[in-house]
Amino acid sequence: MKKLISSMLALSMVASVSACSLQSTETMPPTSATTTIEETTIETTEETTEATTEPTENPNLIGGKLFTFGETPVITGLTLKGDIVGTEDFNKRTIGVEDIRCVFELNEHIEFNIQYEGEQAVCVYVLKHNNNNFETLEYSDEMSNYVTDWELHYDEDTMNFGTRSLDAEDVTPALYDFVFVIDGKAVAVLYVKVYKEGELKEKSDEDLNYMIHNF
Image 1 (tube, rainbow, N blue to C red):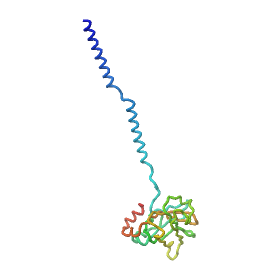
Image 2: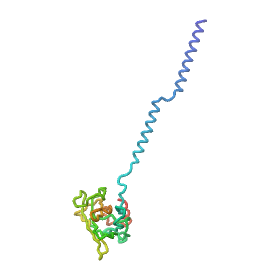
Image 3: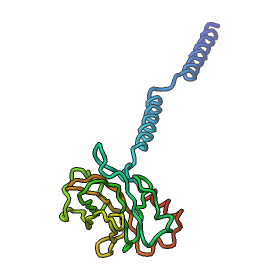
Image 4: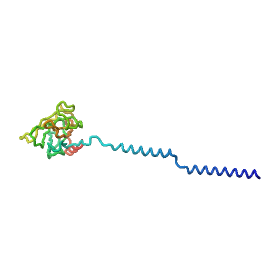
């Protein structure tokens, strides 16, 4: 009888221990390793999002706008008129510092109308676009991105500052800086896009106006 009672007590203890072990396993909280993996994943996602918000390059490259230097602009308005591309209405623009024609073909003649009250000549330096600090440059034909330059004077007979040509000998299809220089100092700049000869002839005025503001 004593042996039977001892056996039953032993079986009861084994069953109790098994039940406790099972309960402990079911209620065990997540390990710290799992929590660390989740936190690492969140941090990586945040870093990727921040990397895509960097500013774009050349935010000031705006077509059709005359950028002037100094507190008091020396040149207060400009129009450029071509002889090949666009209708008469397209080329006949109100003088100002915005909505200036700035797309031309090779070998096209450009008529300059400059709103400027000084007596000194206005020299236009045609430079390959290079994001320069124009006010600090020394202007000469020895500049690394120099293409050509035009000295302009007001003509009372034509009532403009003359006409110059984008000769294929000097210019190739590309983006240029037209820097207006007076007495060796840059006073304004206009970005100008030059296209291959014949590339713009079939463009409508609407197309050309879009190209002026979207290089």
